[in-house]
Image (tube, rainbow over the protein chains, first blue to last red):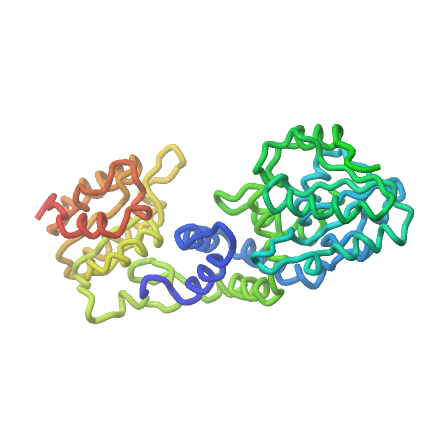
Length: 201
Length: 201
């Protein structure tokens, strides 16, 4: 369309690829950036361009981090024998926000979803068994979301972890069913951690 | 917070500055970009970094454009004697989408808002008078939004334009009251253009 200059059109196209952003929102964001000082767009561009090069996966817990091991795995004050298993780095951020959890993490990078061809091999599940075999872990806290795939992943892990002699716990009820844990409020999530239930010990 | 690496935190901060994007949405977007190939972030960074340098204001209609005059002002098939006055470039994009309007534009870059210190001098209103004085214009179509400040700006212009012997029209009723024209559906907007009402001739 003549009304949209190509440089603006390209930016709108880029933004439309982001989740939850349609064409109207993308246009509104792009026009907003154009009205703001150039320094703001350049700052965002700079931060985007170094994003992938400055962030890697921690070899311990597989979270996104600028260092390996990540600050949490590297922190001697954290209980490295208590491992909280979450779906994604965003879930770890949500758990950290509660300030309740003093252990370390294990990021699965997804949930089991046979329909999408995502089985145990596609997730960091073998690496979880390896951590259990290698270290003297005490407890695995399963903190996958209470969605259908999150529950299915937890069930699979509960089943598989029976062959290790390790305590396995699950986040307590308290999270509304069907809610992604990223969006739970901090107090609900904190209570769910405090009252976690023993499944195997 | 330890859980969020600084490079990711900076990107989240940048995104939070955009309109309608809170901290949770910004975090979700940033984590999404991190999961996608680096090329996508670099592409967005590139398009952002050239945004301001490649786009300027058209000296004719004051829209954002890579060229001056813009493709619309420069198009001999457009009726340069019919000028559609809109608040912002986004409104011009909405009008263009209807495919109904064959004239040219004049972008005010805002609306009158005395409470925010925005008077006629802050908008491209003097430039509109200049266009009327300079050229042999036939008709001014006022296409400000049917919001309170949009209507106030239209009223002010209707009043001021009486001293020029020029036809002044306003978008027809058909747009729901209180709705920003950027968000009107294309058919409603097209009908509003077709049945525009004469205010002065």
